[in-house]
Image (cartoon, rainbow, N blue to C red):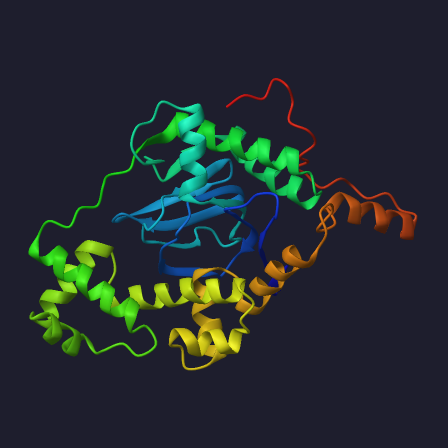
Length: 319
């Protein structure tokens, strides 16, 4: 796990769960800047308290609750208590969630979460069991538990996502500005130059863009650069080359913004992706239980088990 001091984090994928990112982390001083995800965020809080700004208000997620964020929804993240917070998270793609919703719920339209915080210790345990199952190379359990967890959350807290329609003149200008920034990511114009090209004023553009995307153009551009850098890293591009390709001045510039949005440095992020691609099917990463047994055999001392254990989903487990 990547870490500094008492803060640790691991961001990875499991080959048998396509379309799903995984995370374990403990943060104390970490503060996530306003950003978005292409996938859903399902973060199960194990200890401490996370505070995240979401749709105009601070939300509080403590132990036994879940922080739930829909795709492309700006939000932040920070510790709400001095000891920070520890959590495990799964990030299923919109396609994965839509598939599960169509099979197991009666939701119509594009499915999503209604409330950003849900108090449900059972679902919290399911998320941690998904992560443990991937550690143990138990594809059947990981896939089953993920589907049970997502189904339960959609039934308890699901609804159709509103369709984002661009109807107003300001909305159309914001969409055109976004398209220009995507095309010129490595060499974007100034706010004044962008506004002039679109036939509006800088402050009118700033207001329209913030209304449409929840953040000003420069913050959106940083978020978009990190997203594109992630794709390049997933494809094997070295971090130094990915940094320049998306418009950062150098790798330290990428490192700073990447860690503030993704939660781990780009090098650690890429190593986990490479481990998944290179490893054979089976036990990709030794589980904590396996490591404890090895330590016990070496030292002759008995170590205590590390909860939670995934085991096999019981026949009584139901969403």
